[in-house]
Length: 462
Image (cartoon, rainbow, N blue to C red; front, side, top):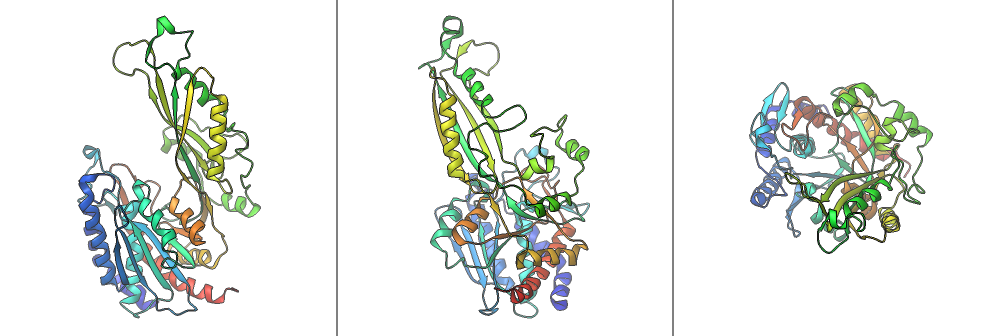
């Protein structure tokens, strides 16, 4: 361990320069003009993995942007296998004029690296490559078996990986997945995300007359689809955020006493949080704390309403059709398919016969939860404490990482989410950044994790 950690320390500058090169590749997966850049990023990553000492490196074309696979499997049959996941694609950087430096020309300022994708997820992914390299370039071996699967479509839904996982169960077989795509609470306080919300994303079409109608000639006798949509949305939940779909909460798993105690350990300053949000005050289900509303409770939100006349001046019409984008965040043990069915049935029930409704379920992902006392979780906690000097807090994250559910459902693997980002890293926004000391400490932490996991796995009563 001492030699491995020394190697990581002595190669900090080299690791940083490699990361800056990685960040300079504009691997924007959603924009066709960057297709060749996405492929270039995959090729660059594969070459860097080979240089690190990883084996069986493959750039896999699976219908979309490439997947990158590599492994090192010589720790022995009695050692655990860790499947490390990350993504090398990034969000679009527009609007460019809001960046203080070009998004694909990484810059260092005040201990931060500024670049698109540095926190989400190139910087965090690269931590794992450099941790593995530190072992292989010193002792020539790892304490555990390691596999990497890295995708180039996370920011656009991950379709290629979603198809790849069930077709390659043996290739991806492991004991646990390790992911760094989340955030710490602060520079000093690490956090382990042990649960993620799932999601059901929907699109509503409300249609009425076959064409737009003059509101003076027809208003009051023909139902305005835009008005009807407003009533439908209002009937989905009450003023305090309680969702009114029958059966929606039937399978919501309540917090255990241990989880409730862990949640209380999470530092939370409501005034600071509210100031960061820019909202005038908090809102939501009165029987639950803000921390519970943010990760423990399911939600339903309207993301967009399309329809009617929104140009300059007046145009008094009853629009022929209107639309809405609505999603629901789900918690363990809610089933996305069941919730989608309940939602569709309820929307059709509350839609008046004076208009027609079509419900499209655009996408679903399952909520996930991992055992907090597994050898891998304990190893992560010990590793954080060794490097940051304090134990991590345990969080239920309000967002969704669909691949975590796929690993759990298809491969039977729980995930350990060891994030090194910060809440104000501005991911998906101009001036995305990553705290440079956390890049270095992240490499140290993963070095400790691999060693700790090997020891705890060997001592676990399997």
